Image 1 (cartoon, rainbow, N blue to C red):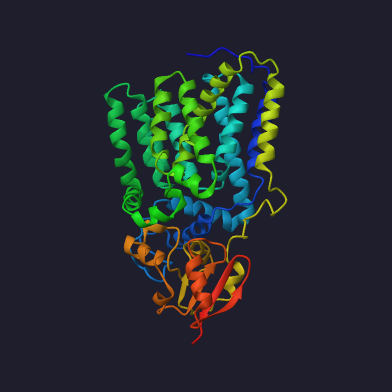
Image 2: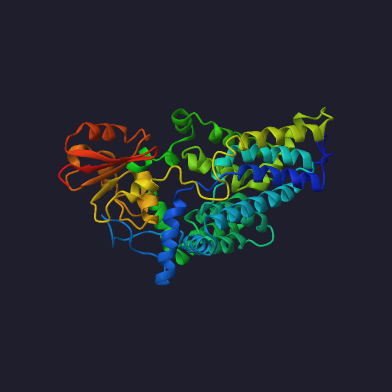
Length: 444
């Protein structure tokens, strides 16, 4: 069913496209800050040198040579190549182009649900504000795009989700979620076949994808500590950030606004994992972005049926959104990587032969700096749960095998260990800045 143009229809043509681009550019007027990019670049360099995907660890001091379930080898090779050719500036432009292209495509595709361009611009503004923290350059973008593309192509051929998943499989394990697309359509038995074929094809092309998912499902210690594994409510209680709940609300509103059963089913299916883990709240918006934009726009059109100042309203919403998105503009270089949370100077003060214990959050930078790591954000794809438990339970008395300790100066979970080290005469501070502090054994 096509919805007739509503009261927000007057904003049309190029002006709507300019509004969409302005929103995305505002969201990306900040440096790259995804720390995972650092270890992914190092992994891609290793893949290029070896000419094969990584199956064992190359970077850990504790598990070097152990089996590694690397579920995103093509992404690692891609960011490594771009970094080698154009540095972090090139990666920043890729992030902007990818986000801009996705937003424009979603705005246009949503026209089949909501013809009003002004309503779609307002809907997109709400979505961008909700997912702005996830608009950094991430491997999961490929999986999100794959879900949306598979859903758009399914009416043309029942096997489209399988083919799209096959393409996305080497980029990220979440390509497995393309199996939700045929379950959302369920027109005949071929959709059941497609849903079964997606994991089989993904496993055939990238076995580590399924193994990685299983690793994370049986990693209770990491799940208890890593923010991405929190539920949306727990995340909001811990951080005060309502963005995940806003994202879930927008997905629910979109499910009310869309009229096609397959669209509504896909939105609801994508919302299920988001109820349990905060990292999936972006998935339920970005994995079905055209549906979310269209569905929210339909609801807006209905709710604002008597409003006649459509262009002014759209411009006001965009202006508020852009103001929120650019509130930190000018504090850091934009077309670059944000090193302000990385222990750049501190690592330079660590001896190359040091037996180093360090915080989880510093593992990605240490890999990038070609230093052996004790633990890092690859998490359950390499480290068993017993190792994670030992890390999070570490006290000063457990540091006997280490002669150097690198900790953040503002991180809550490492505060007890940091305070204990400052009091303990067996360690002394050799370097400290606004990011990190380095302790060295007094006997060294």
